[in-house]
Length: 282
Length: 340
Image (cartoon, rainbow over all chains, first blue to last red):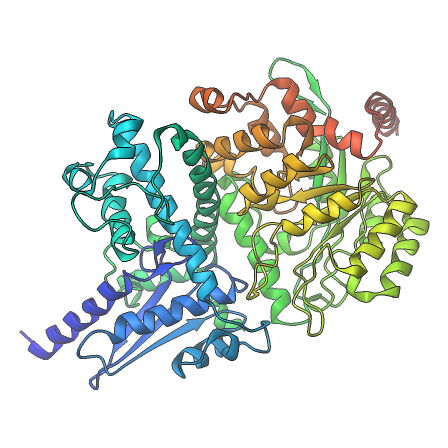
């Protein structure tokens, strides 16, 4: 067995694990799961290159910048990493974003020729709220489905929430993700705290629940629109490319270094065809 | 004319179509290439596999092909063809009013040609509106608030220059203002397709109709809220409708929200041709039924009458099309061409 090689593999897989925690703020889904990460390379001196691409050349620069910056932070938090270098490809302002993130500049500063300036904190907060609400709706609907009445949901505490099992569907996936925001924003921490409150920390009364859920559905419909469109566009954009890379018989390395969750193009079951990388034309 | 499985005839106005040239020969730069590539990705990701076009055909198609796809193979009776200039990306523009009008005049009684303007052009925008009215007799325009121009990264319907244009439109009877408020396809730091400016403009210009293309998605909730307040705000279904194929449950949720908030009198069908072709969209839409749980929850239904309105009657009202007279004209035209 080749020990250094194994260690190298281990490091690469640690990077993928960290990247899996980075979400597209607009979609509230992991960048690895969305298939945005094209390649991860780890060198001998603790440098990590992360190549990523987005569904279109026109995708919002603010979200692209946030994701690149989050990737840099997430990967740099590994103890052995000296430098994490996210590189966005095939995007209208890729050069500005890559330079800005590597130099630790603010979005407004990095893209001052393209944007009207300002910080992204407001955008980040706006989408964190949406993510919370989408996760919360999933859990509330799953609880209703499982036979809990509205009164029980509105009064449920964190301890009871933790004890409920949701099998393997979307609710099972969102259970811990919802809890994570509750704790992060200190909306609920102790076992006796209410598990379902608004993002601003207000209790939700039983008589308000139907109205509240109607609003949350609106949030989900918008996010699902983006999410569904983005997955489709990414798959369509890199259709040929994924085939070339993922097919070891064709001599290419796997496109995905092990996100373990099926990249967009693969999960869509796309045919293996030859194609030209857009960057080669650009 | 769409013929239902039970033999009824349904009058169809396709509210959103294009006659573009996105071919490499017309591309001015990489942006032009990426723009049509992005459209093609929409086409390939949401169309049924048997409706896919080769890339070359998608980049540039002939007038004959468009006519066939919409009116011969397709169920449209009439189509509104929108103008989008994008002169910073394409040498001769993407689909200018001149190109559209040239195509439309070959097919009598079929097309309603809409113009476009950019309020940032100031006086020239006003002159251009006069020109379009006098030359092409337009009744509507398509506006694109996120378009870049020089240092500007977009504009709002509430800008003073936009208001001057709307005043002129109202005066000249250009009463249908289609506004692209949909997926972001040009990067901006702020949300360039935010729908809130529609609210103010619609209040201030009661003589104009604001048709919000793509229903503001992914800002459907904001759009619905505004449409409830403003009687002159409509929703165009382009881009939302193709989900009926791959994700019917999702489409059901969207159309339920629209029926509940906006109502069946204010929703317009549009294929967004050539991103999608109308035949499969209309067939699937006609055969679509809302799931019972959504019907009950929202207290709405997608009845045959609602479908008729969405597919044609609502647009006919906005564009002063006398449906019975139009049907008679088209029938006569069909006999004439059959005889010829």
